[in-house]
Image (tube, rainbow over all chains, first blue to last red; front, side):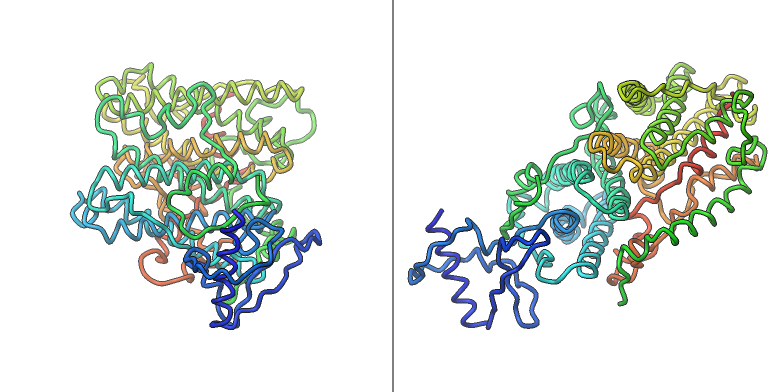
Length: 261
Length: 285
């Protein structure tokens, strides 16, 4: 762990030398001088790759008290939830961008093609909404970078089953994520907007599940017993830590959610 | 791009203004036939019908009122799907029947969950109204008057769509009233997304998309003024493009930012009054 941090910091300093990056301390809302955020002259935090590609220079010696002082943290309260939602919408938007540029989609039956194109449209719209909302309400340095890097190498975009099963996973996960995050939202207006989005994610999940199914048992898949508890009639709800862990396989750019449950 | 801050858009003054104008628009609908759901009700509640009680008892700025409204809507849905399955109208359509069975199971579970929750809070759950899904004999969704299976089936699907899309909007409208009670809010959100799954599937069963475009109802002229007004009320406001003070169709270019896609990507709320007025169309007593 320590070695990892050191490598990261080394790389960071390397970048700083070349890109004129300032490291500024950030005082969070509750006054704790908890972590440091990067502030670049005129640049958004070029996020992806910054921390990932490690140099092996070993000329950095000072140990760090915080385990990941330079990894972006989503933050707490409304900021944390909005950053979290922005990360999920970036993930979904990137996935469907690859879908509509893939060979399965271009040869798909008309109904499936239309559904996936609609989902692409909606997720890109959601992504840009969170970007705009965050930047209108919070300082740039606490807003999640706009181009998180994802790894969809596990998905075969020429294969129907691969695309649809991933879409199902992402939509069901999105529903659980928003359902679990509602209680963390402090401002009613944000809660209502999260509600406006989560029901569309649930509509997506049902449609994707519906086109996957094609026999008698599958007629109930849109809200199947595997996802909606048949005894309570409740959909899933999970905390950010569970969701981020579940989506971790797709997320390349590291970030933390230390102030979210 | 000039982004107005979220909070500015949601000042009490703005909310009040918006609420008032929507209510004005809505009183036109509610006065059309079914005895005014929203009209001012004098004191002396003892003499009022359940319907009038339902309209006035939901002080939906509090959690209990929100739960009572939710329970009323779940009663309506649970009764509807049970009657639909018992009617035989779906028995020749295995897919539709399977879908209705699954939804029926969920709506009944929601009724139980909400009743138990209210009781655990020390509240008396509102009693189940008597529903009239024929809307004063104008419709025959269960083929009780031998309108024929085809007619009944079409009406069954239209009613289900209207109920599910209403449910999604109504739960969303109550979320704010449940803030501060994490368990209640989370449970309501977990029901809300299930209603949205139902809505998507019923819409697709009718040949529509699973999501709502602008304020398109996707429902043909029903030939009865009050019913047509009711359908319009279910979708009124869904064409909204302003989210948190931002016109989301201006956030980029291309297919994700057309008015159609921008409206599809966000479902809108119904206030407690609006949801109650829609439900009241089907409450006989």
